[in-house]
Length: 128
Image 1 (tube, rainbow, N blue to C red):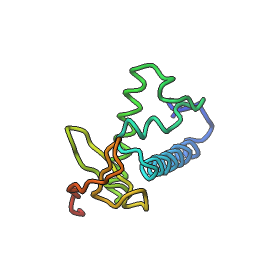
Image 2: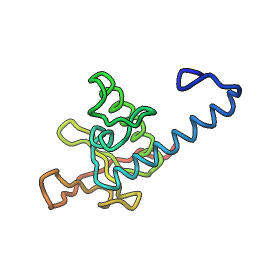
Image 3: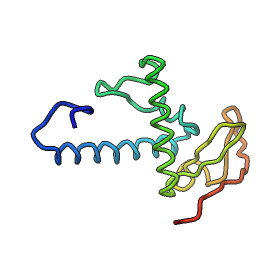
Image 4: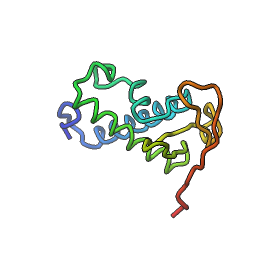
């Protein structure tokens, strides 16, 4: 699996490394949501990117778009796991960390320029 790193002598070890990276990345994203980042873009801006740990703004525009999309997919997984809540407002999907002991209870949204929390409906998919 050299597409995400140098060729190694063990595909099993590399698979374990990728799974650990994915687990760590989910934890970083959950922490960003718990700290108040409420869109995939805002979460992506809090994270380091590439092995050189570059900021999102240091990446070319196309790579920024890929990073935000990757973040959105990770947030979908966190929502499926019940670790964050999501809802749409004004065509933008928002997340909150109420389910992970974050800044607000699930179903609450705080606008960027307000100290007042607003209750919004949160739809959760039934367990399958």
